Image 1 (cartoon, rainbow, N blue to C red):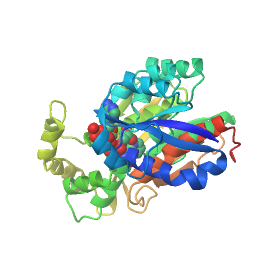
Image 2: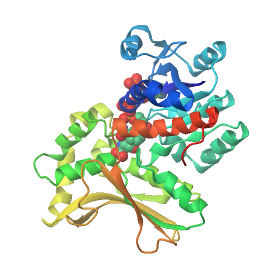
Image 3: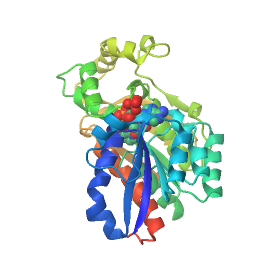
Length: 363
Ligand SMILES: NC(=O)C1=CN([C@@H]2O[C@H](COP(=O)(O)OP(=O)(O)OC[C@H]3O[C@@H](n4cnc5c(N)ncnc54)[C@H](OP(=O)(O)O)[C@@H]3O)[C@@H](O)[C@H]2O)C=CC1
Ligand SMILES: N[C@@H](CC=O)C(=O)O
């Protein structure tokens, strides 16, 4: 039985669901495949909880009672001291701090699984450097939840590419939180700011929801898709329409934004008033591979179109390729949420565990 040791950075919405799903699957699912996933260290932005065995179901209480301040070097020391093998750093934060330590972690034997999109949306130079490092140290870097949460978007793009097809265009609704916000808004019962609060409580938004509302999160996803398709894009290549009123962005802190969130309603009302009654609003991303053009913006669509009929946090990815012609490959499903995202992270983790345990997966 191989033991995979996961060091989990971030124990918020996604991180806590990852722990609970691992604890649930270890006995019934993973052991049968010849491996066990242990989680000897969990951290938030300032504290770490170390446990040389593994976490139990009471991990939240343990974290509250026994966590201590840490530096990344302490974590590396701990895993070396306890001779922990098969190390995977799971990044379930939205922070660039941990991304700054990816190279160091790789040099110290860690594979990386990231829900965090920052590493893949920094400069192209860093994007390439990270991949060179992964190759040089014979590690793996998986990030399937960067686009579409648990949906198989990046794997579909890769398999089309690897089988000789040519992806020409990718278009769709890429944000789970914006999908939820505009789906709820079209029901017409609540102001936008109130729906936003609900979306945050359900774990659909980024820790700072302006990252969603400004289009930045969708632009990052589009950038990651573009790079996956071998375009050497930077974030600046993407035309972005922000929904955040100017006075609530830039210099404003998250606390100030929260206090003045009602001001968002006026901005959104302008878009609502500009559409007809049989239309709804959708925040859409589009990459034209041939023209090398990428944009993300709010549009109006007919209520009865495939975009208009989206429900809940559903995403829609339409992948146009040479072989599929005018009928795109379409992927639809939940694009945000603690559980679906944690399942996506687990798929990446299991792929690493299977390669370590030498398990032949079905695919
Ligand atoms: N929610 C979703 O549906 C999806 C989320 N993702 C991605 O998953 C990531 C996490 O999202 P979510 O769980 O919703 O966010 P949360 O805000 O719920 O959790 C973030 C966690 O990261 C911790 N953290 C922040 N900074 C650091 C740091 N420098 N070092 C270590 N830990 C840190 C926070 O600790 P503290 O409490 O101390 O600040 C908190 O535990 C994001 O990158 C997001 O884009 C991807 C797909 C879908
Ligand atoms: N904030 C994101 C969550 C997943 O990446 C979204 O709304 O899609």
